[in-house]
Structures are given as C-alpha cells and as structure tokens.
Length: 244
Image 1 (cartoon, rainbow, N blue to C red):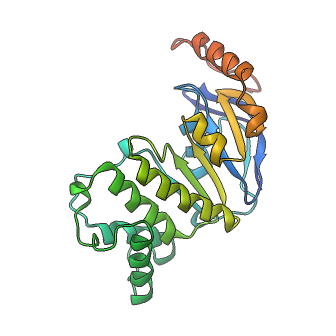
Image 2: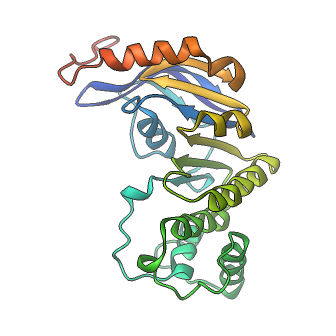
C-alpha cells in the first residue's frame, strides 16, 4: 500500500498538491483526473521519487526505487538522440544491471519479446526519432514491460495516439492489473476511465473525491473541480499551514 498523509507538494512553497490524504492499495488500478494545473503530474513525480513532499508524509510501504516504473508525458522526452528501439527498451533493465552493467542474452531476449508484445516486432533497429507518436508510445510500454515493476505510474499514456494503439496499450494495462501490480494513471477521457479504471482520484490541487470511479466522477464533483480551477491565481500566497 502507498499511503499519503496530509501531503503537500509545492514549488517555492506554492502548493501544486494541497494536503492530500489517502492510499493506493496494492494491486489497485486508479485513474487520476482533474482540470489542467490540478497537480496530477506533480503527484506522479512525487510517487516516482523525483519530488520531495513540502509537508506531510508519503509512505511507499517498503518499495524500492526499482519497484516503481514511471512513464512521463511524451512531450517531456527528447527523441532527437540517435538511439534505436531495442536499446531504448533495454533501458528498462537499468535498475537491475546498473549504469555500466552488461546486457546478457536473457535480458536481450526479454526485451525483444516485450517489443513483440506491443506489436512492434521487426522494429528493433529503427531509430526512435523516425517513429510515429503511437509507435513510440508502444516502445515506452515495452520498456515498462521489461522493467517488470510492482508499481506502474503513467502520465497521460493515451494522449495524441490512435484508437488502435490505445486499445492495444489498454490491454497491456489490464494485464498488469491481472498480475496484481499497482497502477496509477493520469487521464483526461472520463469515458475511458469509467470503462477501464475501477478507482479514481479526482484532483484539483486538493482531493475532490477518491474511491470507486462511479461515485467519484459525478456532475457535482465536476462542477466543484471547475469552480476550484477558476479560483486559482498565479499570484496565490505560499502555503503556510503546518509551517514552522
């Protein structure tokens, strides 16, 4: 279980996520939804270990860094570096092999199998800069398959990709769920969330709702989230609650 207790995440003490409490149960599959600027990506960065809490606690239940796989938004990834599909997928084994560790035949075989599992068999030598957005997202999912983590964090994994690719990658996500991995995904498509994600965190810097999707994505909560988003000001004061 990943537990959040009165968690605040901030930049220069201006909160992006404000006093959030709750838990992601082991094996759960949770969508994180909310308006733009609601703190959704910031929350994933904290869960991935790249952002420390400003206040409160984030308890990972004994998970190590290698147990958590994080897929950022595609816009955050530089595809200009001349690296091939297979080598990109092999980066998923970095937590085990280390920066200077060798890649043995067994790992290479698993990477090739992961590429085939996402529908890109034969693309191993293609440079990632030549791929479409959907093809590149398949590569990133193959890397996650190789990483074989207990927790999978996905930031807008289906944005700007075609329906066929989305369906194939949703099947991978369902496979992870069947394997009792913990999945947390930032999403914008409410119909997609209702169809595939049993749990939802509705975030507007603060939690609007957190629980079964049907009881969280409601007209009342949508209206409340919209009102909170409209009230945000770039010049808002820093958070001082609980400060020394």
